[in-house]
Length: 78
Image (cartoon, rainbow, N blue to C red):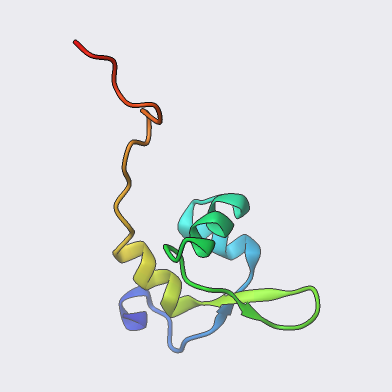
């Protein structure tokens, strides 16, 4: 999969690049990660983390299904 994106090897991706690749905000990714719908971050130290590029590309290719995006309370009866 990495070869399809012209990446010679797997690498760690930090916050800004993760946001650029996924188009999701930090808080949305955090919520999805806690629900198990986004790849887990890898701790790098006390205050830093990163994601594997291959995990992110796989997620972008196969995102989880989204339900009731614009209708959180359901639809009104007709």
